[in-house]
Amino acid sequence: MTNPTLPPSDMTGNPEDLRAVVRDKYGAAAQAVRRGAKAACCEPSCCGSPEAADPITADHYVNGEASEVPAQALAASLGCGNPTALAELKPGEVVLDLGSGGGIDVLLSARRVGPTGKAYGLDMTDEMLALARENQQRAGVANVEFLKGEIEHIPLPDASVDVIISNCVINLAADKDVVLREAFRVLRPGGRFAVSDIIVRREVPDAVRKNLELWTGCVAGALEDREYRQKLAAAGFEQIDIEPTRIYTAGDAAAFLSTSGLEGSALSAEIEGAFMSGFVRATKPA
Image 1 (spheres, rainbow, N blue to C red):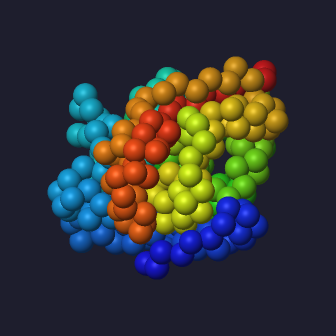
Image 2 (tube, rainbow, N blue to C red):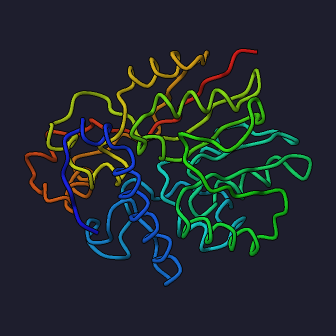
């Protein structure tokens, strides 16, 4: 994939251009998993070797969770957290995963809500949807449905789900206000928004914000903590909370930057601690 660099105004002004780049990258990730590789937010070279751990996606599924899903679902995970572990899902609930990828969080959610509940996965990438449906068959989970669509246009009725989860996907959207309004629309009164995402903790250099490869690598499209809270409130949510789950170091930053033509210890040091993975909670008023 090419590595275009566009100013933020162009990225938000041309959402389909951004979607096309994201679709290409995550489609390629799904194909890599089918070849037996491990998908990563950054390319394998950014982490030193194909076996090295991606600094964003590593080590989120523990305590036996990895054994609950097919190996290809785990290999395709490109998230920055584990929303199913933090969302406190209950039997009988209906869950929607925005940007469900290879299906790991959908399959885990389906087990949490049980046969009386249901888990939907929404993704716009054909290759990921195909992989997710294969993983569903391998897992033998019936209360799952994978839908094709964009998170800005959720193909479900108003007030139809109890919980929305997402794993490092909302930061990729060009218009996050639309995404959050759609999430609010499909949640039932009292429904919960419980997503893992990348959060910006302070101002970062323009070179990072402008680089589209970093956007599709889960970093440059991230909102600041304050912005995230404001946008959730504007969409109608209450009880908004952002809990840090990992703060990224200069070493992590070097891994992000190395695939994007922005190598350099000075820039890595400049964004030391500027990004974090966080768990974002909010509630639709009852």
